[in-house]
Length: 243
Image (cartoon, rainbow, N blue to C red):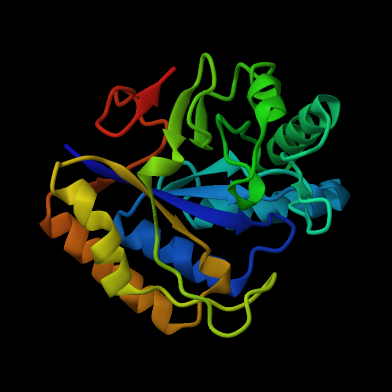
């Protein structure tokens, strides 16, 4: 059965916002499995006394049942002038350090070690491919088309339908365009192929969740399911590339 791999970016464990809670609660109640990407840089300062409270929130929202965490990098910073970011244009050692610190931080706070990775801004280079091979627990990769030993969801499988509201800049608000999502996913529906839907729920204005809900209904009527990136027995699902 073809699937939508819902890739939701930019969750921060040190402050799970009301927008994120509303989105994850919707996913839990409606049975829409969400793959939530964690930016972990600011979480390194979380004290041990705070961890129990964070886990309580995560569990109440359905973590590991309705949704799962994946590694979305450490700093999530882009340097415009040199054209670099966490995983583009920086040394191999630095990329490996970012991956390791993110893995360890998510595990310390949430109690789970991510088995998937997606680079911030979808920006990567050859060093990213090499760095990922040093982390055998990471089995799945978003956007990068090929990493030896990993199962990759390359950029050709992505659907994005979030027009910005105003100037495009960090933290800018977004909408979710139902018509754009339908149009961009049509090529996958025509051949019953799975695809990745990338969203940024913390940037959404309130009406965006209603539009997203409409797209969920649309996909389900088309025979699609929403599933985990690492769901058992699904490694050879349509639209998934195995290295």
